[in-house]
Length: 276
View 1 (cartoon, helix red, strand yellow):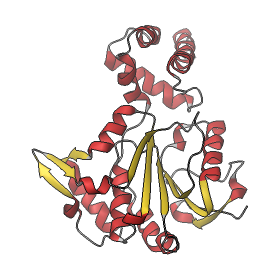
View 2 (cartoon, helix red, strand yellow):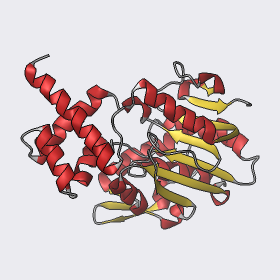
View 3 (tube, rainbow, N blue to C red):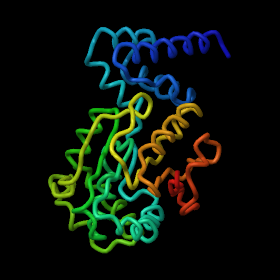
């Protein structure tokens, strides 16, 4: 490690502490290599000479925070991403969920809303949308506004459509959006059963009692202790025999909460809450 690297690591630690103390955004236990890469990118693209200069701006100029959050929170996704995951939900999880008179689904780390709309469409195709309340949460207010708007570049729709068909679609994706000036605007009715909320897996507590929690490609950015905290939160938020879906590169295997879950669809990282 060079002297410059050592100084930059100190700057990063101080910036993360400043974000927590000033705004209660806690990135201190995110995977350090990932957070460093994103902060260096933010420093370069936002035009700061150093991480310390960026920290000074964050503390004294409130307009800097939302711009920095866009780098610290990952907003890269697509509708029906990993279609086999959604097919497994459709074919293996939905039959169990049908037995409930009402359902609650939590999309944790909903980003710009692609997974929210994917699940809303899937549940509509399966006739469960009107008895389901969807909770979509994220720490980034810009992402939550984008999720609420439900507007995506039209050039992404081809990939979204391919994914939707591979998921076992029972309708056409075009049934759910209108094309407008290079954008796809998704039907507002898909949000009629949606609650969008600011929620942090790092600092916030459980809420409601969920039948399905989908949190995909979020835990990979956390260190082991923070992964355990989030998984404990999911365990405590799930109804008896509720389901948890994780990303393809994520696992419960080394978690202190692994015993609380059983494999349900192992290849798709879908787990079921064991009986207490």
